[in-house]
Length: 320
Image 1: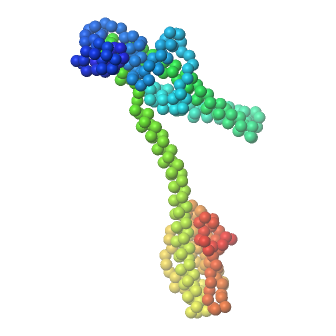
Image 2 (image 1 turned 45 degrees about the vertical axis):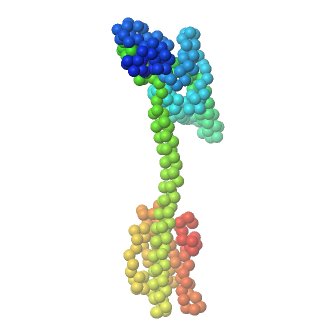
């Protein structure tokens, strides 16, 4: 059973309200005949949290016969969450979509402004000023008219209950169910905090992982090319001549998927070229060259040249 004075739910056998101590009416027939007052309805809808604050505001609105501007700090700092906390779902949804709608409108206005005065710095400044004004207005108006919005919300709830229900106790029960505060704000708050955090981490981690993959692919390809160069060096050491192909030098290892070709591109001087495939690595078609030099000792030394970005290129490679 709900208390007609404060809206608190009590045991059906209780005679006094557990919160305010008022006597509970045990006669359902009398309850059905007793009209639900605005004060009782407001208490049932508001619930225990900040009940006195809102009742004072609502009673003033009732006495004046109209709403007026006040100031509501929670609505100023956390408007969206306050609307959810007070179960004003449509208002919360509208507030959440308001920046997107405002950006669309500002974009249209700025496009018209740019078409008249030219697209340049002035148009950008104009759009920024409009958006700043919107943000200020959104914060200030939310704080100034939060109490009035909540009052209108409660009046609409009461009007619907009066239309649908005739029994006072049932009216109170439904008002209590529809009113009070919602714990959903915590869930949504956590989601709104976690999702952007995941997005930020993904924005950092994914490019870093992609860079790591490219570096690994280049390093693998370069290691294979150096093995081919060693095979050419060994061949030259034995035959004192540069082989025409890598297979002639005894190098027959298969190439990994990111390598399009690995050949001796200059049989006269022995330059080995490795081409990376554009469809496998995100850096596109790139080339690694190993250019031989004959030392006085008769040994071949190799110099790496590449057109790969410095971030991914082997440390001992020089750009060309």
